[in-house]
Length: 136
Image (cartoon, rainbow, N blue to C red; front, side, top):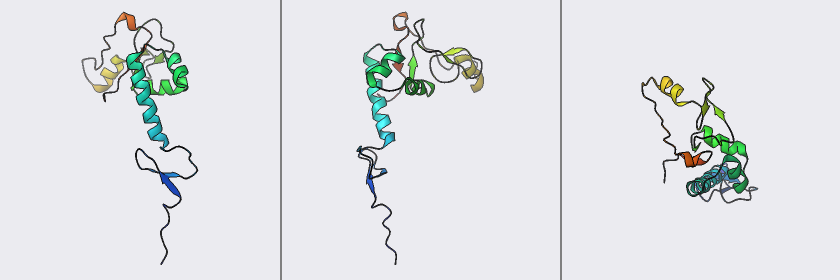
């Protein structure tokens, strides 16, 4: 009878328990590492006014990663004149502060007559970021 040793060449993520190759130096898997980084970034955004560029510099991450979080709707650019990047609606090309659709196209795609998202942003927050994550 053959012995099943398929899991002996792995170590396990300290956070989620997923198997990882032994040659990975870190204690957690890439997915858990990304989640931990985002939580740290989210807390920083809540207590500091930062732009996309500043956030990338502070956390030594790419602006592309920050943009990805914006497109995923996890963080948002507060509406204003000092935006460093302009994300465009994939449907109509209007400027958006998070996600991939503007509020009008989102409303249209959802078949609703009301706008599904309203920022209600103060002028003092112009060009700054905020977290949209629901878990506090």
